[in-house]
Amino acid sequence: MDIKSQLAELKKQALAELGEINLSSDIEQWRVRYMGKKSQLTEILRGLAGLPIEERKAAGAASNALKAELETALVAKENEMKKLEIAKSAEEAIDVTLPGRPCPQGHLHPVTQAIEEMCSIFQGLGFQVVEGNEVEWDHYNFDALNIPKEHPARDNMATFWMNGESKEGTDWKMLLRTHTSPMQAHIMETTKLPIRIVVPGRVYRYEATDATHLAMFTQIEGLAVDEGITFADLKGTLYEFVRRFYGPDRKVRFRTDFFPFVEPGAEIAVSCASCGGSGCRVCGNSGWIEILGCGMVHPSVLEGAGIDSTKYSGFAFGVGIERIPMLRYGIEDVRNYYSGDLRFLRQF
Ligand code: PHE
Image (cartoon, rainbow, N blue to C red; front, side, top):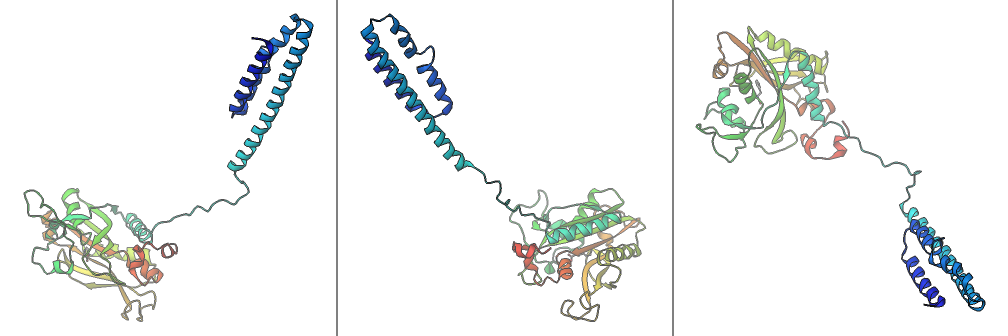
C-alpha cells in the first residue's frame, strides 16, 4: 500500500474512533494511539527520510496535513465533551442555599400519653404493668368474673363475638374483650402471690358511636391480691392515684356500685374541674365526674383462680382512659381521637 492510501485509511479509522468516544478520559488514549510516539503516523513520518526527494515532499506534506487535521479534531472533541459535562453537572447540581425541607416531628397520641402517665403513677405505688389479649374467651370475660351465662350483667356489655371454634374440650367462645377485667383472672391463675398489677389495653363494645361512646376504647385494670388486703388499702391507693393525677385540690367521692366480680363494689368520682363542684355542662350538673369502678375481689373469683379466699383478699379497679384527656382539655367529641385528623392530634 502506498503512503497516500495508508494515510487515508488511518484518517478514516482515527476519526471514526474519535466520533465513538463519550468519556473524556478515553480521549487521551485515542491521542496516544493515533498521534503518540509509537503511533503509525509517527512511524510514517520517521520513514520519510529514506524516500526519494519528490516522493518525500508529497508524503511529508500529506502526513503533516493529517497530523494537523487530527489535532483539530481532537480539540473539537475535547470542547464538545467539556460542554456536555457542564450541562450534565448543571442538571445534577444541588442548590445548597435552598432552605431544608421541614421534617415533621410526631408525638404520642393523647390517649397513650394518659396511659403512660397513669401507669407511671401506679408503678410508683408498687404496681407492675402487664398487657393482655384483646381477643378473649367468654370464660375469662364473664364466667371467671362471676358473670355466668344468662346473668343480666352480660347485657350491659354488648359483645362482639368472633366466628370460630370453641376452645378444645370446652364450650368457651371467642369474643373481643368488653373490659380489661378478664386479665384479673388470667393473672391470678398464673402469678405467684402477692399480686400488684395494672393492665392498660383496648376493649370493645357492640354499640353505636356518638360524642361520648365508641365501639373501641381503652381501660386500665388494676389488681392487688395478698394476705390481709382491706378496703382501706383500696381507698388509700385510689385516693393517692387521684391526688397524684388530678392534683390535691380535687375532692374524691366513694359510692357503692355493683359489679359481679367485686364485693363490696364502689365507684369513684372526682369533683368537676370546670365548675369546681357547683354543676355545669361538663359534669352534667352534678358537680362530680365518675372516673372508675372498683371493689374488693369477690371470693368466688379468687376461688375460681385457685386462691384460698379465707387466707387471701384483694382489690380491683377499672379506669376508662378516653374521658380523662377529654375532661382535662375540654374535648367535646370522643370520636376525634380516632378520626386520624392531624389538626386535632397536633394540639396535644
Ligand atoms: N370492668 C368494669 C367495667 O368495665 C370496671 C371494674 C373493674 C369494676 C374492676 C370493678 C373492678 O365497667
